[in-house]
Length: 450
Image (cartoon, rainbow, N blue to C red; front, side):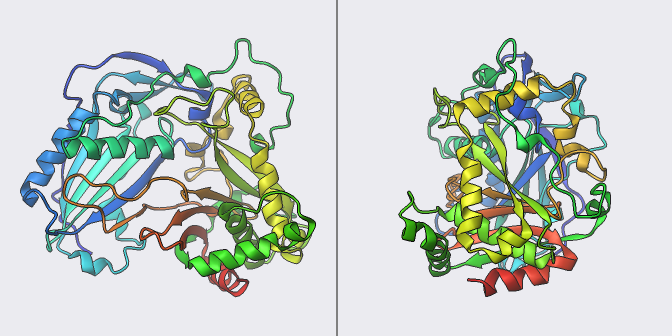
């Protein structure tokens, strides 16, 4: 694919004056993924296209200005304030908007699976720039020769999690269609603030420990250097149901509670397949990171529209030999046990634990970019994020819904993501990043063991 290099980039600011000042981030905002997360949407010309293509840019910019008024936090800038901590300055500095034109047609992209060409379609974040100079949101609109377009957004995970990012995008689309705001964003982060004073933890927060290392290694420096690649693998509804049935065989025979969910089952299957593909020794410890949303798990559920990070990673730990030799239900049970630790008391304890830390650097992924600090869930570990229940499809700015939506890029060994099928047929897509040396074996075991 070829993109004209004469890209046009400019800053888009809120349409009206907004509140200015510094906002303290919650502890959950400042750990884990604080880099930028890309998503991309593709649209083709259709009878539903309500405006000529040359008006698309103006419609998007105008509606973006309007939506940045209630979502003014996204027009601000982050600042390091010492001890590995961040603060958000609401200053209406705006977001970056880029226009690009491609010499290609949408059909040249085939099935739209992430590829090296994506780097031309997704805004690049220059992490060598001081963080206070980086917009929190970067948008790129690319026009194709066929009249189709792609719209990509790269957004700071230190300010929003997946649920909040999707809320912003859906409200932007509503305003672009001429509709009023659906759910007003709730901007007060005090609801997830640490207690004063923080209370000593009554739990062991394994999610903040260093994850297991490969046997015989003193650190993961070598594993971080190894080249990784991305694959998108589909499971049909029948395959998903077959795996659930296999996972629940033992549970049904003992009549022990509700059945394992799609996430518990599929994550367990991925975990086992990864262990096999990596050729782990039976005694190799391995961890699986589970990203759990706390919004409805708090004693007082967070208000609708809470804008920020409300997720916490919990950890399932086992030995590769147990995962590979025992039934799938064993892996699913380990994952469920980790998820069930996420109670109101556990989340509050985790927040207080982080507040008590002298420095948050070791919990932040930004330090893992080309370095040896920051969390790393590559070999022998893995993280499986679920978008299975998020409203990720149907983003209509007034010219119809997208023909494809997906994650941008996954750069780290061990990153994976479960997405529902866009056509609602019950199939599931796994986007996974593994070391090049392990990917083909993973594909083999992933499908062979169904």
